[in-house]
Structures are given as C-alpha cells and as structure tokens.
Image 1 (tube, rainbow, N blue to C red):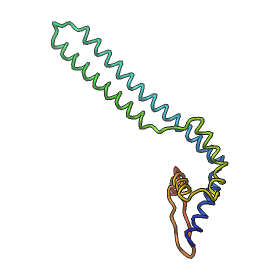
Image 2 (tube, rainbow, N blue to C red):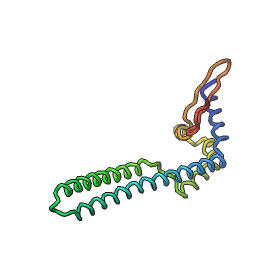
Image 3 (tube, one colour):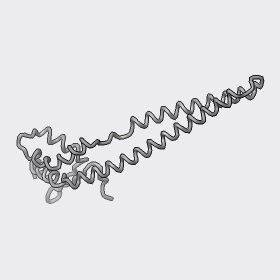
Image 4 (spheres, one colour):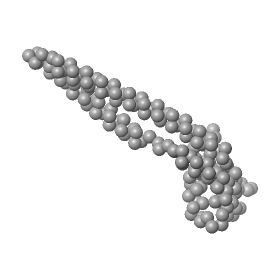
Length: 166
C-alpha cells in the first residue's frame, strides 16, 4: 500500500467522521465543560471572599484591642498579617486559575464550527486546498495514526479527545 493510498483512506475516514451530529455532540460536551469551569470559578471566588472576610474580621479585632494590652495586640496583629497573606495567596491563585481555564467557544464560533461540518467535505476534496492546509486540519482532529503491516497494511486512527481502547 502506498502512502497516497493511506492518505486517501484517512481523508475518507475524516470526511465521514466530521458530520453535523458529531460537531453538535462536541459542542454539547464543550457546554458541559463550560458549566464545570464556571462552577470551579465560583468555588474559587468563594474561597477568596472567605479569605477577605477573615482578613477584615482580623483587622477589626486588632483595631478594637486596647493599646495598653501589648501582648494581645501583638498576637492580633500577627493573626491579621497571616490573614492578609492568606488573602493575597488566594487572590493570586484565583487569577492564575482563571488564566489557566480553557477558553470556551462563543455563539459565533459555534456557528462557524457547525458550518464547517457541511463545508468540510468540499474543502477537503477541493483540488485547490493545499496539502499543508489538509495536514493542519488533520492535526486538529487526529491524535495519531498507527500503521500495522501484516499481509496487508492496517491504519489505526485515534481522534483527539477520544481515549484509546482498553
């Protein structure tokens, strides 16, 4: 089997696999991921709010202590400083996680993805589509291809986001 035959077989598989239903399923999964990201963000934000409350409470206790009672004032000041450090760390972690959260698709991108399902076969089979562009499209949806040579060559294709079989 020649490389061009393998390329043609994988291209045919790709055209058959990228359907409107498959893309709608992908977008539904994306919606579920977005809900989970929102929930995680909400929980992290609550952690920051809790740290803010504790820091404010520690500040209030320190401000209300009698200045003549130095030992108590020192311990309350130390507690306030600890709460401020905890608050700063919580805010920093919150911001770090927000930037690390996956970027989700908006409505306009969703429409473009669904439009691609109907346009994909035409784009793929268009003789004017450069080989480099086809290769980029493949890289977006295919994790890897394993060729197994026995009496005939078999290509095992693994799509991105699909776990390997057990």
